[in-house]
Image 1 (tube, helix red, strand yellow):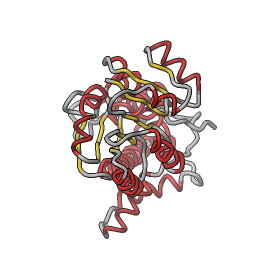
Image 2 (cartoon, helix red, strand yellow):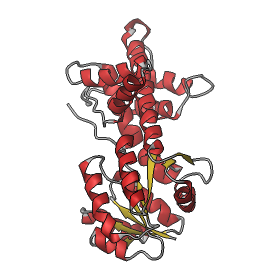
Image 3 (cartoon, one colour):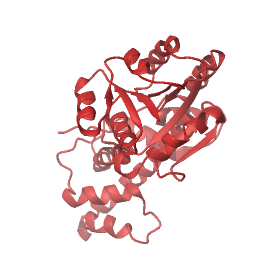
Length: 301
């Protein structure tokens, strides 16, 4: 078993490492040679000097897994791969692409006989140790080929699924991230209110740790928040600025297009926009949570 992993940043690098630890050969390429060299040295990855070189080192049915930023970079890379692949080869887009773009790309590749899987990927920087959650969209025949790779990246048969046709993987991940926005916002606002009740002098580290055991709101997101608050409850060093990576916007647009009320998801997105102008504790908490589960950069004061 062997595949090419293109893009070895926070997610792609850890995914390559997890595959290698499960005895799957990975040919890896990234423009940052430090990423490549580190994985060669620590995990035994096969280095490639270019995308062309990476594909040339694959045999039989070729699988090229992309972990690249959504948009033009992914679009151009898929187009550049076409002359390098044969009928029956498979391209996997594991980034956070818009599902409509994935539908268009899948249709284009199908006309050429090249398989395409849009893979919604969740797990953040913890996926290397804990396993990822993978949502495959595409033809079942290609999803079946990728099953052993999914089993290595996840908890065998519990952390991945073929959810539907091309586009459905990224659509599912888009909604996953929209829900994530709402959950984060609820925690941030609730903890902001707890902190604001100064007469009670509440210990937020104690309370969030308490909620982790038996409460209805216990979750991995709460686990990460409780752990972070053990070290710092005031968050004075963190700027109340929260970025959005795109999926929340697409989720709200989808709600409008379907005519489905999604007030929580919409307000959570708008709160991130507002964080650029309004200073508050809840925004610091949101920034802290994004860093905890995804390794996203924290803007410092």
